[in-house]
Length: 520
Image 1 (cartoon, helix red, strand yellow):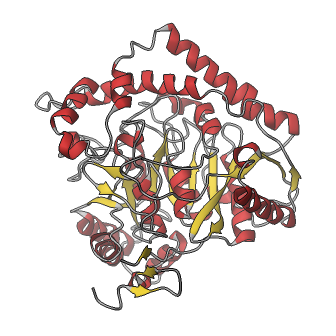
Image 2: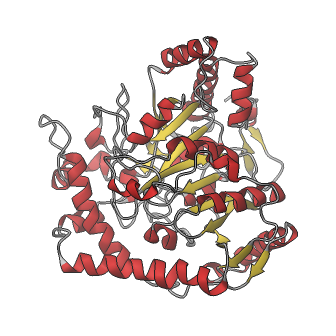
Image 3: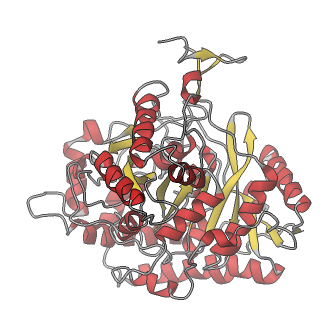
């Protein structure tokens, strides 16, 4: 290995890939890229070339993050077309000509597959874009490729390994390569952190945007369910699924969310967004946005972890100095309840929703039901299940229809605990604008034998309620990022983005990854 690529760090038997930081577009935001194209510094074609070379250097060689599962073979020609539009005076908006990556469970009607990381869907080319993909294209964004993920969005096994898929292998954490990137939007978060793209899209059922964003040290936005269409996204749960932006700054996330958010006739949940979608989420951003804000601190998530409580206290100090009024504690009355009910809802809905998606595949393909996927995995155990099995698949397959009383009761209880006795109760009782706590703990070691070993997080209430949740970098635990979460009432994205942006400006906590690894 070339000495400029792999250099020893100062202490502790740790080494860093020094050459990984030598990149012209490293850490640039969407506005800077857009301005650079307007000034003639770059073309969209040049951005594609630079990011593609970066992906080759970081993913294919060097640190080998393994964040990108597939590149768009038509990216260069699409860039040329967008460059011609710019020359003719037609600029679609702040995303015009900018390369972004999509999680590989989002349909694209092009020469890229959509597989959820599974070999069972390898070569599946959907006949039409997911609604959000078409929205991004209409806004001028260039879909550069697909990102790796925890296979089937981390809903296959009770002992899964985040960031691993049969098709894509293991995604690595760009801060410490032996550590987990978390999941399931592992590749999207790792790619954004490592400047493999300008921004990316992930998806979440419970934690799959906010956890990898926190652990990889970037911004993640899990919108209100219904703000962003789910049509054309391989599903887990129609009650909780949503796509959302992952970016290096709150401003970039707001730009991406603006392009993604819209009502879609093919996703009934988006009908509720009528009159609630903002024409430009960047208008909510205010560096003084914490001044006069009243924030409730959810203490119980990390009350037994001294180091995590210390990091939370540090973040609270930043919030106070920026003018926020703090209510501490302001825990959810239902804290720690509802896990069993949520699991039942997800198992029932996964079977129903995935079967509906798979039924769209052509009859020539065998994998047109959950039962067929289970059989495929058993027949290809050496490649699909070398580390962990498919217990969740099998449990879901045993479930009946969504008319069963067990499902109906579980969903009713979920909403009660997450909303009425959860987020809504805490907001009303303490008269706060949002609930704040650490998103999750720092990353853990990748362990293909025992599976994930995380220390918990706060994603479930907002996920189950279908409410918005924003995470922003807050601190470094040694070499590992930790994010701060803001979550609140349905459709409160403008408020949460304002608060998160003001905290981001005050804390300045994000650190670029150094691609550290233990020396052999």
